[in-house]
Amino acid sequence: MSGAVREAAPRRPDLRQLRDDSHIGLLLGRIVPGAFPPLLTALTVALVAGTLLVADGGQLTGITLFAPVASLLLSGLVSGHPHDGRFDWLVPPVLRVTEYGFLTVLGLASGVPGPLVFVLLVAVVLHHRDDVTRPAVGMVRPGWVRAAALGWDGRLLVVAVGGALESLTAAYGLLAAYLVALLVRESVRTWSATPVTDLRDDHNDRGGVNASST
Image (tube, rainbow, N blue to C red; front, side, top):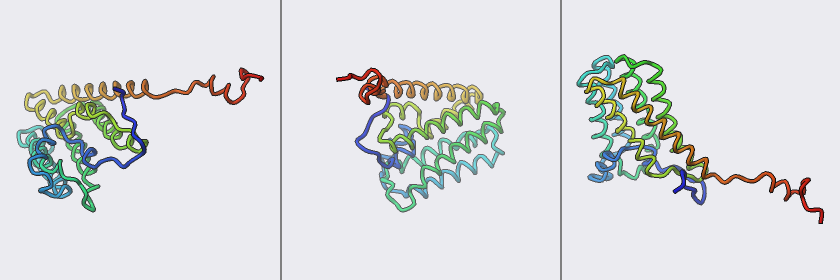
């Protein structure tokens, strides 16, 4: 299987894919599909995560580590919604701000080295960039690659578990290294599957120096 799947024509990305939910979140979405409005739920997730961070100054505490669990439970319930509302296009940006903000504030306030927080954020941003840009050129990433990235809620849970084990810096480092390795592997697979025109053949077809004189 190639590193990227070629489609017939460019298309708009599916908002449900841009949500970047984990397997657990997708499973929760099958329980009550379409029961709650996606945008209102996403805003509630952002509010809950932000409130829990502010409550303890963004530092690592039990109530702060509960934010990823609350986010997963709330957001997962609408992951199966068709996202066909007028303003549902705002859902992915709200979830992105929630993830980036949580990782940044928690990491910096809890003593995780700034460069490490930055590397993790860059890896996550590049992961989301792939989901947004590839459909514009008629391609999508393989499903297993998206699943392997753990989902936005899954990444927050990894950080929460690391914090609960008093290894928050290690959790940031391992998660960053894992996502970077996944991105590099997918890039290599994509490059190797991209057709390359032989410039020598193209030169001959245009009547170059090696073209036939007959």
